[in-house]
Length: 509
Image 1 (cartoon, rainbow, N blue to C red):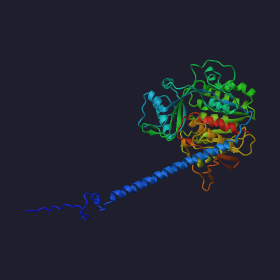
Image 2 (image 1 turned 30 degrees about the horizontal axis):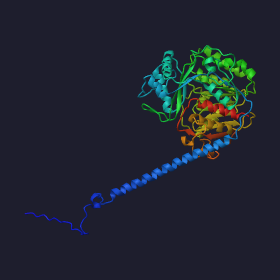
Image 3 (image 1 turned 180 degrees about the horizontal axis):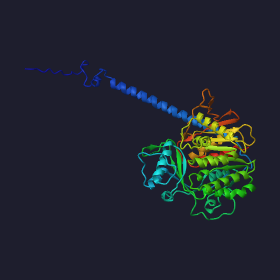
Image 4 (image 1 turned 120 degrees about the vertical axis):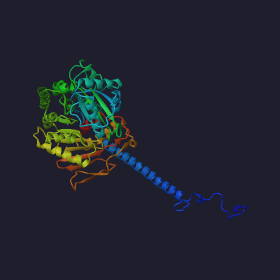
């Protein structure tokens, strides 16, 4: 008994419901037939705004990087090379191999650990090497360590050489010397005159004595393990690009390079002596008598120099507080100039003030903190008995170059020279690009910074077109230049030595 009514649409009937109605997909909760479309439109608009903002921000960053590069290069054009400068650089040298850190551990069949304990002070086992590497890797910090166990060193050395890397002449002294010679200085290098080194060194670099061939099988090898910012190894991520260096030097801890040039130095009569590489003595198994003999050789060498000869001490990474304290007690009273990175700076202050080592410090330090740390170091060093005034401190960091220069001095130019040349050298070296493609760099610094962490301290602007900031600070002039940080890294090992060499050379009057 039920009936069904069927309504048919007649041609031309405009009042009939169409076959497809926009309200068919209406939002069941709101009844809004256009709900989904409106949401899609809003989402599209927000996404477009975000994309436009990111494009604008990227353009602004690249524009700023290019403006800063142009400003630094323009200042550099007015910096001239000091004429006829003789520089003695030491001590020692080695052969370097550069490897991605993960490649070596893969060659050694080592997997990243799930967790690590306290970092060791000595390296006798592979677990200790891995623990220490991970500690520095996660902090993005650099380190250079002596391997105590001969069997462990042989295992690491064979694995590294099995990857067939290029053997390059390295060590602080040879790298600084090469850079200074390339710039036009006359350089005597404090390294033993061995064929394995002489064959790999610029003929323009002077070595003392005749060339011999006794170390071709026992040369000192440094294995430089590099890692990039953001690189992961198991559960660990690097916070910045850096390197971890392993060695088991035989010749460098004996300071053979210093002995080789002692007599030649008097004839050479250098304007400047650059001393670095003393970290090769760190954790070396000296007897007390042997260590005292090495330290006495350093003091005798410094005492033999003319009072008019400038001396620069380049700090490094140390874990042996006793050695660092004794070294600095000998070298720093003779030093006109000191150089270090932002992680070595608190280490040096700590060992002078307390006798303790800061094993690893923050790799992301504010400028205001670095300025305060430098002032603290200057106060400590000037309060100690000295043979001559400390007239220069150069702090080189990833993000900037800062130099304190004593106002009343007749040996150094304005620190603007060191700041600019070191900044550009750092970028050119790490990027592997002399012309600097600013699109492959980034600026870490903001457009101003505080000169101290103390309340009410002066705020220093960074003017992009003329990006070097200089200001008076007590008896010192401080100059700071930003560094354009490479986003496509070619190399990090040796960067500090290159910018140290350039910064010192062009700072000379």
